[in-house]
Image (cartoon, rainbow over all chains, first blue to last red; front, side, top):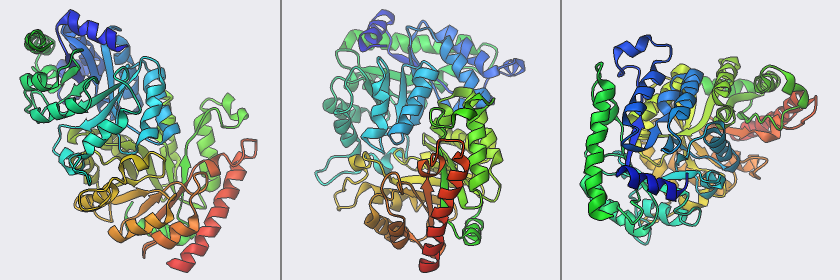
Length: 271
Length: 271
């Protein structure tokens, strides 16, 4: 998917919502567990009920991988089920030396047909660039994450006072463009999103941490939105586990609709 | 596997060789391609011929993942095939927020039965610690890798002049012990291995980059060996693709034997 196509969808739906698919057998409604592939049935119901409000879906690969080869079959079926005009993110946090990253790219871009993969930057350019060689496919590079451990290394300042996450932003600007490179930027520190936006004015951000992790959607939009919106704000648990009863899919729809309504207001205000 | 068991095996075999399993359909002997699972047949032959000389096997997960759910089935079969007294490393470079890392750990430690997983440190403690909660299982944490891109971030110096890889070493010493935490330390800069060894005297290093990538085994032993050996030196292509003909397994055995002989000399000299 191209940036123009993604932006067109954001405008059409008045939404920049990404729904995170973290399907946990222990949390899905009991009645689904008797189905042949409970995880698939769960994701299918969530996608059908939220597709009007979401511009992106982000399967968390670990939840499928933990189920072994059967989990990978389910992941492939889920990816194929997502409507083709909705952006897809394989949240896999991959990254290895060149020829190995190329194989990870093939796994997600050829063996499956995801639009993007999340990639960790620690190993540098040759671990990231192989993902950027596929037409209309994207890297979503970890910059500033929303977890407690992000403080351990990402904020370490170099000899010029520049934090590591900023080196990642600046260096990676040489590898990709706003047409194929996004960044993970956590929502838990609103004002830092503004700092990131100054360094990379044009790239999309995938923003986790709104809702369950405490970030404010209004702050994210205020500090992070650009002329192409430039934001995909993710919600996982808040939507997919809005109810664990029979009404889980309808409850997910309702939560997605609430977020979309708030996003429509923010798009009208800042875009 | 415990550290004592690993060290006992190193002494028994006079070897600290790790054989990297990077099975590429395009490179394996043509006659295997007609088998029902060519990748499995290839790995099986390599393991059978090198098990006398290797103390560890390191399947590169990308090579299996690129084949989808079938590749995961093959990976599971390969893991089960490796003799239980040989250390196994799932070279997966995983790492994500806590509950997600826990699922990756389950994938490799419970769904399969690997002894260790390679983990990327960028997201900090809560992305690494979930892997350390499994008894007799190990994290192999990226510190100083052997690829060109390692220069991009790993050597950035902080305000006190300390390079990032050293912060990773020091910080992670609070998370694990020499009984469950190893580090990836590339062989391509021999003298740097000595720097790393000063910071973490007791932990094992997984050392890629000997052979194809140009590192010297003698330098690695000179600068890196400790009282428990403390080294697993990996060779992938140099062994598994020593020949692409019918004699590939025998050629692999011969290359593994050569490395083991050199290692026996280095163990006698430095241990």
